[in-house]
Image 1 (cartoon, helix red, strand yellow):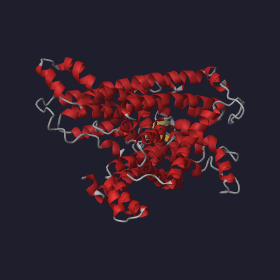
Image 2 (image 1 turned 90 degrees about the vertical axis):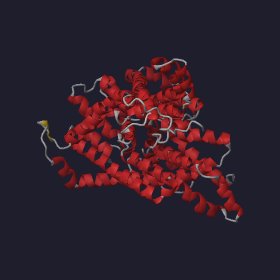
Image 3 (image 1 turned 135 degrees about the vertical axis):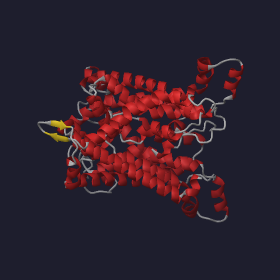
Length: 302
Length: 268
């Protein structure tokens, strides 16, 4: 994601030996060939595939037609499905920002040992199988007797059990849990650049806690929240396991629909069109919001 | 530095409980003595862990995942270490574009990658083969291997290399005896992170796996699609245990926040 791309070091040219012009090419050639051969070409083939024809009995026909794209553009089923995909991704992003940002701030104020312990606890799930984590939510939601419903009813928050399985609510909750570490990590990274003395200065000048958070902390961590939001949004919009397990077979999002077209219906060209559209939409959204953020917070990135 | 008030600590407690709840509940249900999904109330039982052994699909999928993860991250490193050294040390035309290309599998949705690989390998007659799956995993875990190797190569003290060169070392000897040992922590962490990514991948693999090459996440996913019973929770609990072990080692060895953020400042 965007946070990952800027790792290419920019200021090491001073020590770099630039005498031999061929050495860097010789060193990168194997990986370059691998990437062109098994990444660039397959992606180009997928774009081509989305223009091919398909029929129940004739299979894939390598012709150039707009049939699949026209079907996606005109059939309201696809508009509804993409709208659901992006609605779920947006809600997931809002929830992770609402809870992840304060948690990162609290985490950052803890003392050394507790800080690294809880960082491990919160970031660790990132590396645990997403199937296992989603299975956990399926168990917690589980019908009317699920633990979540029991807890909410015993707290008096709801009168009767809410449906979580096979609903968008359940999908958003489980996705927010899966994506939360990305947000905490992103805000936490932004907090590392924050000078604690500025908070102390504001305190000594008589600012209250709320004012400090609103006027000092929040403006400074906002770039972190926004870059976390971009990561969470694009991962949620293309998520597969969680929507497939919690959403079931009827509540489709872009990734699960593409999977169905490929492995159940076998209409590969249509599935490829759905996937290419998802990729293009995400690239536009990510690049667009990156540009907006960098213009708005130009001083932070300098 | 100001400290957290009681409200902040209550928020923190609820947050941590919510983060851990789904993982803990899977592990608890795995120990149920009953024949159906339930939290163990009176006693813990290992019957569902023993049952895994009588399910050859899960056992086979586990070995596929293990082999695939170990091999693909190793192959990815063979490509990533030279590339990382080139990117870290030389300023050449197109360096930024090449680095962006190498990290691009992080930005392309895995569902799109899965489809692209399925299309490609079917077209060249390698559909459903383990080799195809391996190559796909190499590409997907490559950015993780590259990022940590790159961080190590960028932060490396080059005066040791200069000394070795002045003493007459060169080429392969220089790399094997000086450079590689110096960047080894980054390389090993890159391998471990790449392994975990490969071991856990579902979205891309589900398009490529055939009954003979099903990985554990794929087998678990397909099993859950049909029904959820305590068997899949005990398999999940085992997967969680394996990942946790790798995680703790990684944290001790390198620092988990650095691994995950892929930051290139070794001075921290």
